[in-house]
Image 1 (cartoon, one colour):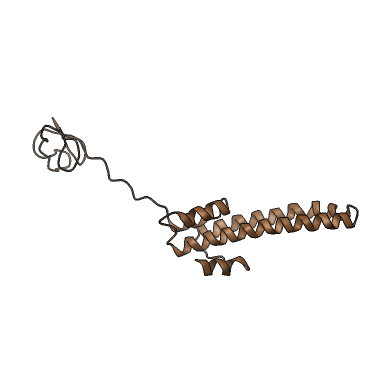
Image 2 (cartoon, rainbow, N blue to C red):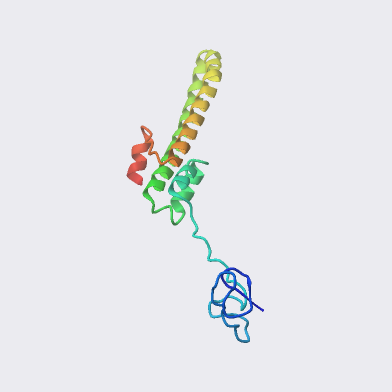
Length: 165
């Protein structure tokens, strides 16, 4: 008994009783038709096109900062897209800026703490969580804006990212 290539129903004749598609003749000794499907069975569906939308890729550029920014600059379909390249570069520059700012604030806090015999250290303990919360909020906003196709250009790193993209 042959099966329809289109819907998979049993087809006793040359046409499928369910969808009306033509039933291919059984293949020769190998058991496969010219299209590569096994005789009597539906061929597998074609592979879906790989990739994701630009807004999803742009938002994912910010997910792990340096790592995902570099990944999207290297991956084939995304490294040619100007929008994704902008968000990848801005993500890289933003996170490098955060690292530099954290190192600078740590050195400044340590130096001021030594000069004031620990009083500035108490101020640093209060300001550090606020600084980290502001960074986290900006990171979430950048991901949200990129996902919603908004082009947010940060003050210092944004123009650098635009030049690179």
